[in-house]
Length: 151
Image 1 (cartoon, rainbow, N blue to C red):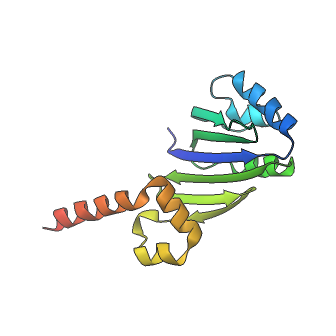
Image 2 (tube, rainbow, N blue to C red; image 1 turned 45 degrees about the horizontal axis):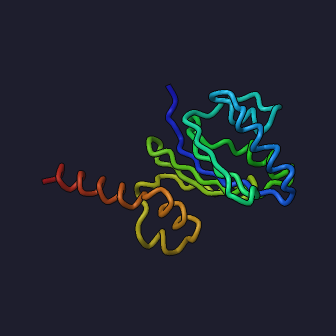
């Protein structure tokens, strides 16, 4: 059984026809086939608990899903190569990893539950990830649990 990685992604494309065609494909998407819907050549693992939407101008598609072990970075790179602008973030609490990326380039943060406020303030990408996923609340809760165990 894999660790489930939580993912949020925002896809934008300058060509509204491409966005509308992708929305039409997503509307017909088979369960668990998010990645294959976005890239028919996709041969790897698939997504679970997919939630998606688009803005009223049909210029942007938002995605929220779970993936096994890690984010689908290869998919993001493929989409960027097709003219999509991709913003993505992920959080996998079991392995204490998180990250953020743009157009297929990801910045990964390991040992995420050990970060400090100083770490967050010195790195704007880390700060965005922590705020997006509410990780500081989790870190504070873990620290309180450790203090209670020490007493």
